[in-house]
Length: 221
Image 1 (cartoon, rainbow, N blue to C red):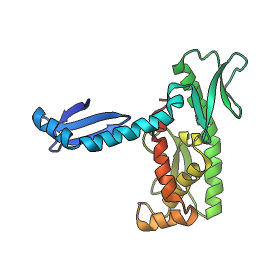
Image 2: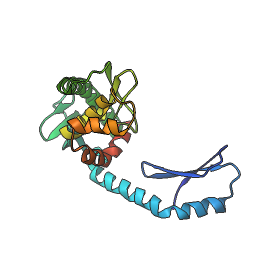
Image 3: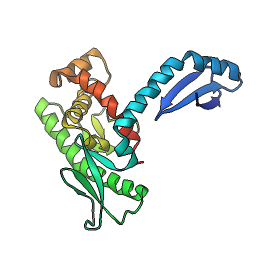
């Protein structure tokens, strides 16, 4: 099994998996035999996590390779166009000007389009949802977070990952209600989840389904 070994001044041996890469963090002087034994003991868990990542990337393969884009839960074909001077959205496709001749430039242009779209749409959805359920927040901004879909600090400042516009209405609403619930409960206590459930009864299913799209937060970087 391939893995990245990182040694540091630490006392414990840990394994983490991110974007399909296994990283082992070990003390400076720990023997390789002990490290390999520990990895062998955790092999079933490691393989399970790698298989989960493989399934996610398979579903998102078109988005990862740049042939597709996601918007509101739909997979759109990415079409290079000589007729468009800026990115244009239709029901089935996202037209990208031919001047963005390689994937890196096209991805950068698509990301910029997503961010502009998200800053308007997510602010509107947050405001409308807050008014509907009677919650107040202090401010809103989009973020480029690698692991989080949203956050809310102790002052009620809500931040939403701009990639949320890639997801369907239900998942966006779940994340927004999740963060609004944090304006009352700054933790994940039973009181917090009861608050979420009050306005999004199927939160458990949404929370589980959201994990399917976790690979998206590593894209367009």
